[in-house]
Length: 501
Image 1 (tube, rainbow, N blue to C red):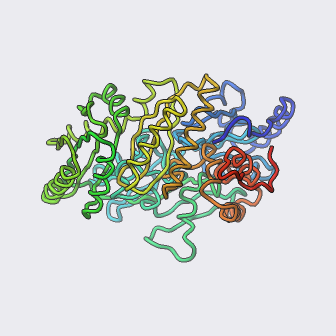
Image 2: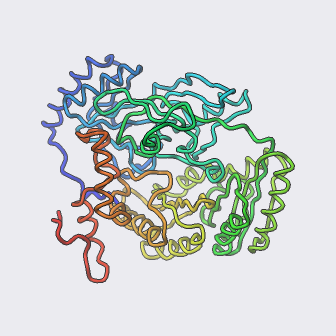
Image 3: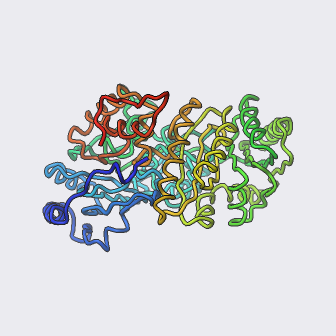
């Protein structure tokens, strides 16, 4: 985790003021005056993304309105060696859009136009500031929609989705952002135009589209995205299954997949999360259940009827204590409303929360839940859990008070142990929220120095000066040494040859 003790010393007020004047003067030639913000009351709203525990006020915020202005800003920043952090709606949960103290936050909020939509090819070309849900709303008259549906889809932008490789509750069947994007256009750190992918289903050469999706704005600044659209299913129905034991619920998830069923959505919530969301949205959840599964089927009425029957049989055999199948579209949406509002519901019962993100093998779902319960006692903090259970993607929400330095420290330790445990169980430290600053330390747990060096080489190939979103995602070896000094395993510290700070 990113702790204050490991953060580098910031610039002095005089250094900051001098650099700010220089940058403002340079950017004033690239964009109109109204597109530049540098007074503290204007830049403070940009000091963090959805991860509010870590904040840094940017030197300058720039809000260009044309591609030419984006290009001019990047060229000016490259000439002055000014770091640039691209920002969408600021809904990210890993600190990926946290500003640089001496850098420019490049907001793409004004790039909010859908440029074209073709029902024949089932594609749409949209600017990076277009909201995720707006794409589906525009495609609705053609009976099409954009499949990835993160919980923040009402606000999050497609550019941010590309940066984090976002998924959502229906990603098990329809895939993540990387499976639903054909092309990304934008600019390099030097301000040169660049295109990843193509309008075709495949492109020759290296698959650089897959490299840039999920790169968290470290390789290029995306301005335009071509997305795939899929037909709306004729019918969708959802099963709400209650379990009196989390292990039974975890085993049920594995059993559904083992039966050869790929649900449109397969989500899991534990008892604390169920209680929080039920109080918020009144979805009719079973408050006595230790865990709830939401299993959705979509397709033709005949397909749905058959799949609902098969899933119900599997869930009952796995020990479900109650099954409720939606009988109308309104009831289906009500079942999902709780899951979609898990994060705001948690915000009502705690001053702050830190939403973690890791992925484990489906067979270990119960193991990680029980491990988290032990961690709650260890760190003296509550944790509510919601999972994209179908692909093993965890979203534990650690509840704490950020105004209490000790609670923040314990929360960081709690989150780091969840990540380390996920890796130990054969998983990975992120599924769809990215690394940002939140997981810099635990990157050292999952990846070797050689693997991190390879990541740095890819970054260097695109951005030799390291100006795009610096200090994120890829930890330095010294950073790993600092993290490693807190981890003593078998009486040995990690990388004893590296200096500690």
